[in-house]
Image 1: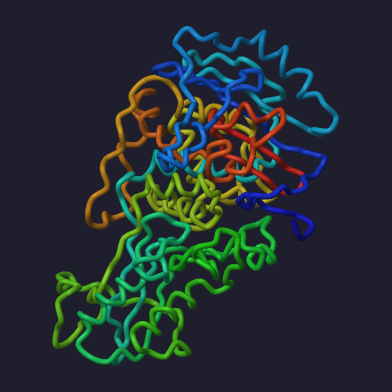
Image 2: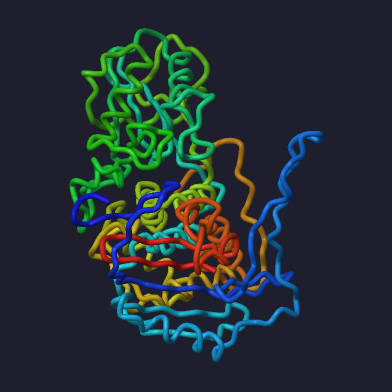
Length: 474
């Protein structure tokens, strides 16, 4: 898959050779909820199928999904049963160093484990920790806001990055890899309507985030390979050269590229785009969409909001988006009053989980995406987080996203005041998990052979680096 080390890519509908040695985390959480949905192991011979072929006389017949929840009285996994199945498999030499844990969220019981406290490189399952911290520390309905304000120079406007890496350069009728992304065209339209004269210069303010754009343990070639772009507060399409494709080369200068794209839309010279600071916003700015005779420095000329945080969390998990995960970690840091850097985000994520009652002993993280080879996480911690999200109890939905962007940075009654409250906040994690044989990074897996019975049942976050393979889900 290129290079001496490889990060996770979204699966294509083809078979890809895998390394024989797998070193990482293996974790499955057993779930017993409501009508009796449970984890499917290979011995459960369920299948996903379609209805009969359409006839020429009646035309196409809508497919009928045959997957069904298990009955309330279906046999539940036991510690004895799981040990009988997993002990021999987990000890196979081909797996190299393997750790794992199987938990029952309904009872808190550990049904199976193998060195669960040993910390290993998690790969992209590390995103589960960042996603959990974001749901615990941020308003799920809040949106990251990108603004354009009037500059101090003649005909100058300033693009103020608000951390939203999903802002898209595509036209309104085209979708990027990020569902519901705001469009740069819409922002440019507001600015043209509000600015009183010719726009000559675009400056880009990326000061919301600080520090290096590349984390310890990242490789420079990961940018051209399509896994990451330097983390800045202003990024278009996650830095992708082809916004509608997941794995495409990314830019090494995301902030400047965003400014140049805006400049072209405003009739300014893209070559003159530079990084700089925005003037302070006036105490009573004019409405962005109303034309004015003069724009005071700092006056808001236009603004657009990202999808709500809860949607961003689920997207980051489903497509394993490194850039989006990193911005969420920085937003957690800002909400806690910390430094919006890689180190600050890592501290904030672990501190948020600790305050929510999770045991982070042994976990050391250098980034929020799991791309860093410096990350170490025990399977026990990943299991605890997933079990909390899957536990019986309150399933109160997150607040509905508002129609206008909400400000970022406030903590929602943190830490949770009860186990049920923690579960309610973390429940959206389940909606972001890729589905085996269905979507996300599991879309092309569990297709045949011994793993096929898991299609449609296994929902899990994957993690892949060279020599590392991990899975956490239910």
